[in-house]
Every structure is written in structure tokens, then in C-alpha cells.
Length: 346
Image (cartoon, rainbow, N blue to C red; front, side, top):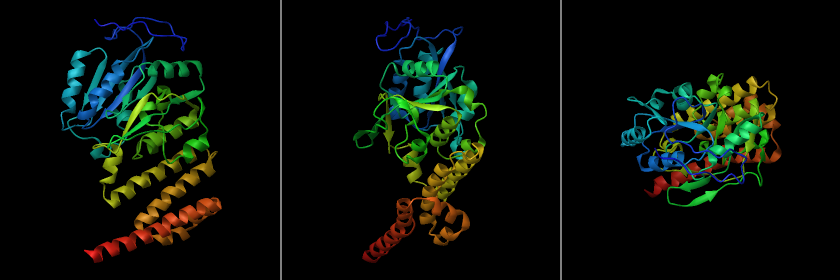
């Protein structure tokens, strides 16, 4: 059996131990790594190696859900499961669940299997670059009972090879709710998430039904406790690659996009009511931006005169009202003129 060497504990107050990669069955699991995959064959090995290189003073497990991949992703999962049978537990689907409108893949299929009290997320096309990532985040959750979710910045890796890192705060600190809900981009990628499993017992349906998974989870955790931002780049987030959420969204027809965006509005309304409207202004502000996108796509400009949208619009600052006006009226107008000109040239 392969043993990991003693880890450097200079910066972290942890007990140095030898950790058996096999993770004996009778040992308590502290962290469950939950990984969702779909046609991630070119990237999955790097993702899994990032899990296996983790040096911890506790046991962890790796749960992998494959959503009926067709590119050989399942072969890689089986290969690693055979090599690490006591560490990796796969769920292999024969029918694509996402296409059946099952959005919350990890919540629906992996969380019920998780034995750890903490959940670490990483999709199959992303990967970790710090061997102490799990240890550092688990230490935060151990020491700070008020923390529901621990996140960190990541390096964004684009399809063409360009890299960019977003640093939200200059130092490690608690994140402010107004910052979390106002940031359209960038969110902390899910590969940076570690949260307390206990809070997911009553995870609301309107969060599960949202077409995006990171935003509702982040808002929900922020309303249940505090989000701690650890200012260390410990993962890589691939953007705009084949099979990623962003690339698949771009391929959808306009009507389907509108339906998915509506699910985000429903999630915001649900969380706003669920939290007794204590952050009502921030929720309204975020809804306005999504509504403006929907209006510009549908070209239903009369909707802006409706009482609900008009009331929300009036509460926005003059600067935001101007930005919304440009998004709703000016950009669609310019886009329409451009398309007409292009069609005439053809």
C-alpha cells in the first residue's frame, strides 16, 4: 500500500500522520469530494489526480457522478475506481439526467451517499493545484463554527490557453452578502467550495430547480451562516471548453435560454421570501439585471411599464437605471440594425 510522506505543518496546526491512500472502511470520513462529470475525457485524469494528491490528517472519499457520457469518460472512472476501490465510489448513469430536467445532480445523487460532514466540490473538467487544499479549508470549518461555506480564488483557464485570476478580496476574510449577490462575474467557481453537509438537509426546491448550481448554493449558505474567503489560489476553472456549462448554454435556442433565466428569477424570489426579505434591496437589484436580459431577448419592451418591474426599477440608483435602459433598449436596437445590414449585404 502506498503511503504519503509526512506533510509540512509549519503554516497549519495539524497533527502529522501517515495517510493510507486506501482509506480503511472503519475510519471516519471527514470530507466527501463530490465530482460531476459529463464528456470530460480530455480533462478527467488531471481532475482525479488533484484529488489523489491531497495530504490530510483525516480520511476523505471521492464520489463521482457520470451523466451517461459518450466519449470514454466512464472508462477512466472505472480505471481509477479499480485502482482505488476503498477511496472512489462512482455513480454511472445510463440515461442523461440533465436532459430529464434534473438540475441538482450532486444534491440528488451524491449527497445522499456522502459520509463526510464537509462537502468539497469539483467538476470533472476543473482541477485542484494545492495538495493542502482540503486540509486548509477543513481547518477553517473546524475552527469557525459560524462558517457555512469556505471558498477561495481560482485560476481561470480559457479554451485558447489564456489564463486569468480574479482576486475578490486582498486578504482572507468573511465575504459580505451584498458583494456575493451583486457580483455577476466572477463567482468563486464550484471547485473552490467546501461546505457543511448538514445545511443541505432542507435545501429548497427552488434552489435545486435553478439552471445554475453555484449561485443558489452560495446565496443559501450565506443566509445560513457566513462565507469565509481564503485568499489562496488552489484550483483551476476551465472556461468555454467543449462540454462546459458556459459552452452548452451558448448552444441553446433563445426560448430555452429564457426558460432557464426564469428559473434563476424564481430562485431569487424564493430565497428572498425564505429569508424574510432581510436583503430585499440586493435581491431586487440582481433580479433587475436578469429581467433586463430577458426583456432584451424577448423584445417585449412594454413589460417595463408593468407595476412589478416599474417598482423594482424605481428603487435602483440612477446609474443602474441608465445601465438597464441601455441593456433593454439601446443594445437590442443596435443588434437589430446590425443584423438587417448584414442580411442586406448577403
